[in-house]
Length: 294
Image 1: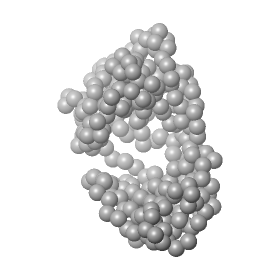
Image 2 (image 1 turned 90 degrees about the horizontal axis):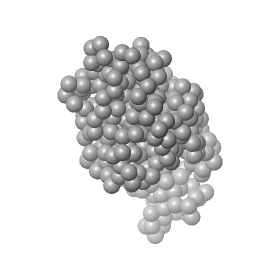
Image 3 (image 1 turned 90 degrees about the vertical axis):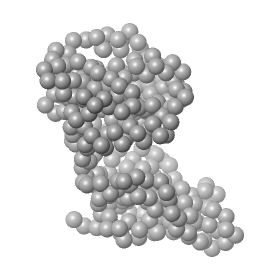
């Protein structure tokens, strides 16, 4: 099959992200596949690129994916990237494709869904005593009086289990946490945050974030939950998540369910989710192609 590859300009992105794109077409000019290369330009992750590749089911096993992948790999190398990552559902065509082309599986993720909510049990968890701490919550952008310590609390995610992924580090400041909230708002979705605060000094020591579709239907999605290392062991993650679930059910009664994904090696958060009633739905893998040494 004669194929033609067209590089495209992708306007999506932001100050820390660039995207390159390619469209594969057959001899008659019909699109048969596409690929996007996401280049991360923030400190701590400038070595990393992320792949998204799609081929029309009728055109698979005809060289379309390989042609697109070759272009993406060259683009990543030309930009000086060290690692190229891509997700794949367990047993999917992408799972087989990536494994056959030199990618290695570096992270296993389990997705889980909470279809209903045991409100009495969650309420008991919410009202359980946590001496020295209190909960605060907000929708959208963090309030000014909490912004600095909320940004600082993001280091709670620095030791999140990522197994063999060449993930790097992410530096957070007030501008960045506000930019994330703004991006969610611009998509027409709702960002809801519950945080644990040290009662002694009013600083944020843990957080959990949930994003809900704009119309309040369908499924919401947990974006991240973290507790600073020096405040772990007090049940704060379960406490915050219970409150987050109750808020979602109260504020969005038509919501279908809540989704979360957790690395298989993150045994603590998996236990929290299991205890709150989340049921595993499927598994995905993060694949990585090492482009350079060092």
